[in-house]
Structure formats: C-alpha cells, structure tokens
Length: 355
Image (cartoon, rainbow, N blue to C red; front, side, top):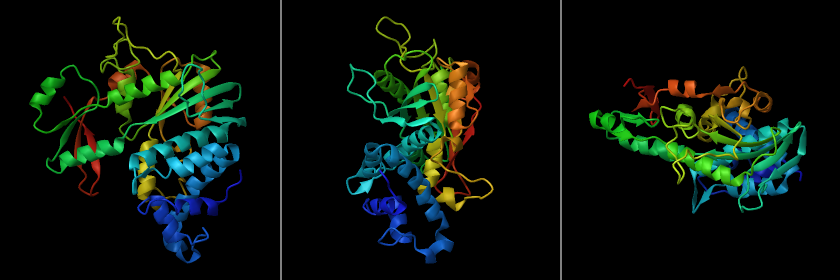
C-alpha cells in the first residue's frame, strides 16, 4: 500500500480539535495536505515533526495495510470522547518506534506479521513478529501511564515543596513513611508485574535460541524504577529469586515464555515530541528521530540472555545495550525527591535521596 505525506496530513486533520498532530496539520498545512511554504521560517519544527512520524507510517503501510490503518485511525488518534488520551498517544508512538526499528533493520521485512497470534490456546496477539537474519522475534511493547503518574506528583507539589518518591520496594518502607516530613509516593513495580504476566500469556515457549520472545518496556528518564522492579534482589525484583510474587505453592513466580526484556527511555522522547520541544531544539549537529530506538537510551535485563541474542539486539537497535544484572540493579537508589523546577514552569525534577 503506497501512502504519501499528504495522505497522512489529511488523516491528521480528522483527529479531535486539540490533538497535537491535527493542530500542526491545520496551522502549517493547507487543505490539500501541502506545507504552507510561507511559514517555513517559523514552522521548520512542524514539518520535521510531521515528517518524523510520516516516514514510519509510510514504511508500515508498505508492509502491512492492516497495521497502518490500525495505527493511524485508532492508535495515533488516541480518541477519548471529544479529546485525546495523552498516554495512549505516547504508547502508540512507542509501539510505532519499535515496529519501525525492526522493519527497517530486518533482512526480510516481508516476514513482518502484525498482531501475530503465536499460541493456539490464547486469543491474545503479540504486537508483531518478524525475521531478523537467522532469528525470529515475537515482540510485545508495554508502557506504564507515566503521564498520570506525573500529574499525581504535580498535584502533591502544588501543595508541598517536595515529595518523597519510593522508586522501589524497601524493607523499611513504613519507617521511611513515618519519618518523612513530606508526602510519599509509592513505587510502580506492580505495573511491571502486569506487563510480565500479560506478555507471558501471549508468548508460547520459544523453539530454541534463535526464536526470541521479546518484551520492550518503554519508560521515561526514571528508568531505574523499572530496572529495580525487574532485577534488584534488594527490591524483591520480579526476575530474581527474591521476588515478592509467588505461586500457590510458595515458589517464585516465573515467566518462562519471556526470553528477553529491553527497557528504554523513549517515553521521555515522545513527551518532548508531543510538546513540540524535541524539534524546536533540533540540532543539525545531533539529529534525532524518536521513531528509531537508536535515539532512546536502552538497557537489556539479564534474563535468558545469550551472547548471540545480545549482539543481535545491539545490531537491531544500533546501540550497545547495557546488560542490567542483579549487582547493577542493587546499586541504584530506591528513593528520590521530587520538586518543581525553578527555571522551567510545570516541570518536575528529581534528585537522589540519601536514606
């Protein structure tokens, strides 16, 4: 299916009035979907923003009309009654970023299967499957509602100068809460647990090292929260023997169908993209494309990891994914302080808290 930039712009114009892509399409493009050249000086960021998402959408349309239509009509519109859901929009962008990266780097992009059902005893689909050289990847993409989390923190900061952030499970939680002279916000490890449980149900047991069931978790700059929830024994990490989750027999809950877990910071990139700041601050010296995982700093969790799998994922994402083991996860700080930034209104900043 061949799609051009004008087709995509016209699709954006059908979104709800306050959708950021519709606002760009209405203000900087004419009714035919052509950029208003008289606005080039002030609208360079706008054409860069639209071009950035148009490229992966065009590529997706070429390989799967079903995936393209679902993405542009349902997911990217993120419709929520008469407005749009910001988290759902960011989630759609995260998913598109992962798909685009894999398709562009695949030795056999025609092998791409959108919403592939990989097990017969489930009615759930993975995001997609694709061949990468002699590997086959089944990929599931997850992102927590960090927009809502930021809103809850901001609400507390409107009435308090700072908030104590519990970024991971700590043994003396109640003691810390009792001594804190500020509001306390708990950790998000149950979100990570939900991702593991859901992905494990979608995947079937992989058939050897060359088949990889990959879970990609898109987080923001506070990536340490997800890494500790997964791999820190001190924080009862979900992929450790000390996990807080156990089956009915009291054994650690396992996720045998998940082969690899990658955590990246693309959620932060897409916050900037939607606000328009990503391309307003665009530098020709350091170009950025949020729809390639290369630009979202990532880590790979030491779980069923082999050297070949690690090297393959490095090649796909064009970065050296740091391996997060238990020692590294335990070295991360489980508590931080949130305050409002003095120089940037409505911006929350976080700093390490020494317990």
